Length: 178
Image (cartoon, rainbow, N blue to C red; front, side, top):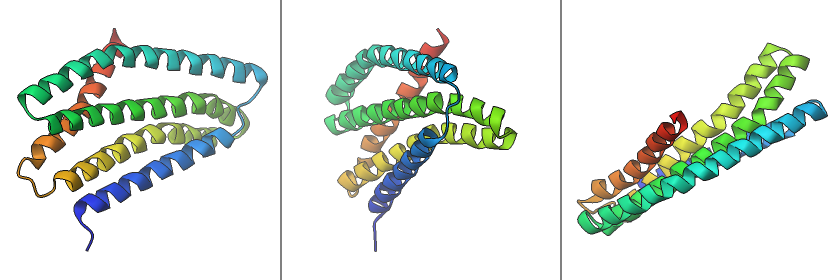
């Protein structure tokens, strides 16, 4: 019988594969005129520059919390925190990448094929982020459960992973409003 950690790890990988397939589907769709493509590329480039700057700022926070957790709680918890932070950052990167690629394709689909096709494209663009968040979360928890499954302090380590993922999402949201 497969353990919970194995099942979670497998489901996390399956979710990431599905997210990748959806992203590739988005990339295969027509983007419209050359002007639409040019504007889309500029929006995408701006979004990636913003994300890079945001993550650069968040790196200081991650390092400080990593060290605090390592010295005052446990180094395994600190490593789990770091992994959760990185997973959250990856989900943000993949999600923003997919969303900016889907925007122009949604516009083109609305113009050429109607509302239903545009809705499907918009849904696909957003679903990549959702699948990445959920899949990376389940994957990380599955891996840490497998590593520390029988240990009584497993929840402390796994909570470190959750804290890393949550703190990046919260601070990224806060930075976006400023």
